[in-house]
Image (cartoon, rainbow, N blue to C red; front, side, top):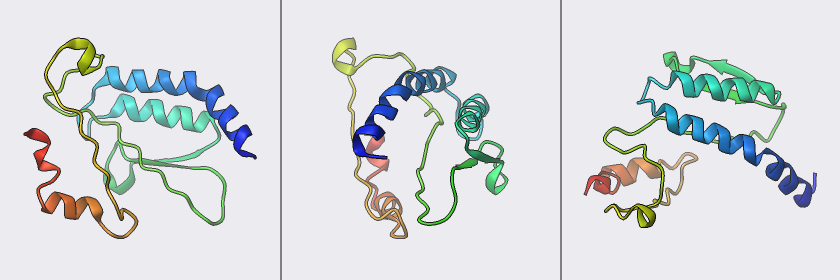
Length: 130
């Protein structure tokens, strides 16, 4: 599959991806309680031909979905829990006029280097509350 074909496939799936994203936003399920989000994601992944394993590591809402076989193995991490104390009101800060900060963290060395761990130990991620 060439680069152009890959972008065409992504564009075709965009409406469905946005629908899923909006649904998960509306569920706003806290950590370890993401039952509706997990179910929606697993159903959609199975529909696309992925083999889904649920209940990983003894956690009811943890899952993996695999497509294909052999190497290399490419892993993607998806986070779908809501954070307490945050509004589910959609809209950008500029549009709403509400105070707030959007902060992006570049997390290096996640594949065996524990970048997030070092950032957390240094207090970088805790500063989100400030």
